[in-house]
Image 1 (cartoon, one colour):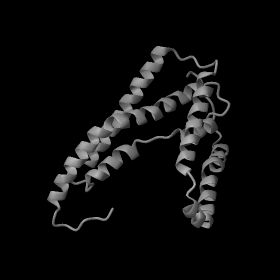
Image 2 (tube, one colour):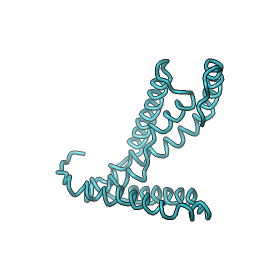
Image 3 (cartoon, one colour):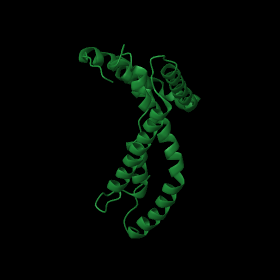
Image 4 (cartoon, one colour):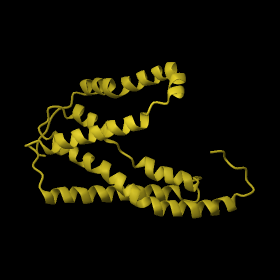
Length: 188
């Protein structure tokens, strides 16, 4: 971007601790005491989580693209989209190749989990980290564009690849089961 700055590590780590680590620890402690109540009442945490994530994505998109300092033309946006799509697909391919090697020891189900989980990046942690590290930076909106694109691309790419990966896993699982038919099954 043609500019430089210094990074106050102490301030960044303390803010990240307060924003990420402390809420996680508090949540784990509180969960111990209200675990029975949670199991009885079964609050709709899935819907709440999805709503909060959608709100974070929406507010970040609004904040990014309503910023008058964001100088991003359509061609650059398409190039960024293509690069991020290529990176995401490349990471998924690499994890597939490494997890399906003969000596990897992973089952087909493990491979699917590795493909989707190891390449997953979330806005819920990425945006707060960007806002802390680049606080006050005039190009913060521009810096957050790749993450704003990466998150939806991983969701779309994953949903497009699910039928292909599922059929691969089912066929491979049959071969895997036949190969290890005499071996004791691992409980799942």
